[in-house]
Length: 363
Image (cartoon, rainbow, N blue to C red; front, side):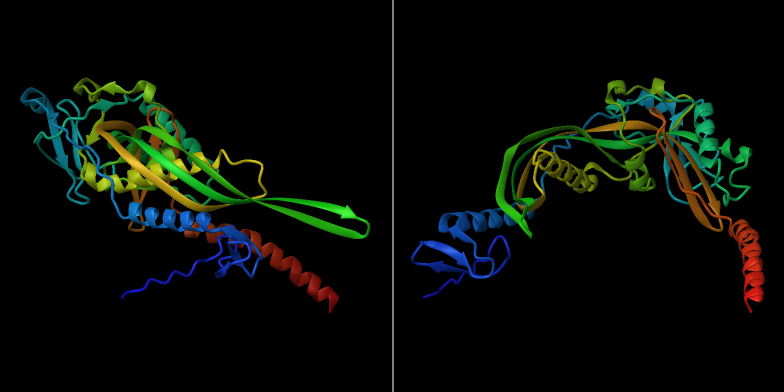
């Protein structure tokens, strides 16, 4: 005959619980807390269910059959970067002279091979002049930026690129439980007394998500895309090749299944933040239990506008990205060590000379 032994821990201090026959409760001898048996049983049942749920990866509906027609494919041109393998597409009137991701000046032209057609596009609102102006402003005041890096001729190489994104729709059903306290301090005679009230806070509900974006390009650093978000979906339009003239677009190289894990993580984090934001008025708040079940919806393919400038400095790639709709930007900037040490010397040497004089006079 098999036996199962369960050692329950106190939810407050994680100390061992023992059953007290006099009260019928489970008691903690460390923090002197008492809990009804049904409460502890439910707590452990919730933990087991959460563990089971965590091991089940959601499955999104990625049935997408919208492909480019032969006429549209004939209108397009393809380029391949031999350095980073980025596959760039554009209309037949636009030429790709260098790779917008790694800055390689040689891209190999070829015939566009078709494939999945985007469902949506957000057109560029900001033109090249706005992008170069923003970049020059971003460079301004950066004392240690290499001169050649900030050269205006180099800035002119900035390119407008439609970056591929997957947009995920879904609903989360969530149940959250927190351990909270309210701490008040009062004075009684010569004593300073602190009163701490303990609470168990629960939240349940559903949160709907629409078009959660995850970039579908392995060439684009996720941190860059997170930094230039959000995009305003009010400008979201049905895709048409009419939006492409004058701009480049990258074909996705990470499918919707590959990007689903990141979408799930973003949705889960957003759900937890939304629920936690409703628990106000407490001194401390500690998450005790979380169960988030995701009901997956549709996945759609979109092209979103980004201005990109890539360059190399000391064999390292640096990428500047700006939201082509809102103007929000992020940039990797190199440091000219020669300039840095020259500036340091101009500051440090006079200070050292003054200190030397002061020490001499003191002696």
